[in-house]
Length: 208
Image (cartoon, one colour):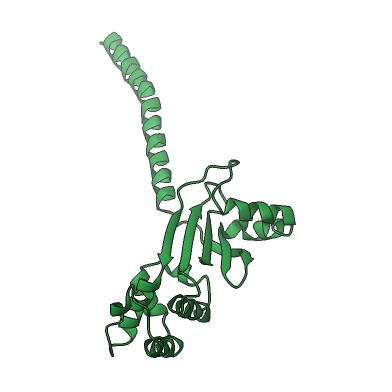
């Protein structure tokens, strides 16, 4: 009876010892899974817009994670670095992996459709592919200059707010009038992911 008892005790102790690593491993895997799930649900870091280049007709900005914004801004003090970043915004450099650019246009039809949202005195789309007469052009200019066109423009273009906010309201008004007057063809927006930690993306807005 004593021998059986000793064997039983030894067996139970051995089984317990063998079970400990498996239990510990299971707990470790569970903890790792929980950590991974928490990391996956963490919000992405805020992106800060930083201007690379800007003139009357063209603006190039980058979007940089907030924690790198100061460092990146300091690097831009180097003219060669800034110039390289401007070249990178074209998406043609071979020193990093560039993903496909997203290109959008604002043309005459978009502006006429915008006018339809702002003014119901006529069907502005009747002027698609037809020159506006002086009377219609003057009316369009009055509507554009006297309105906050951003809401209607955003509805028509379905562009992101960040794209529209790249330039001030008056720049968009002037661009719309320039398109209707035949001075330019439209406005082009190009968004190019960098494929790097930062900047995350290049945004170019230009009249063409």
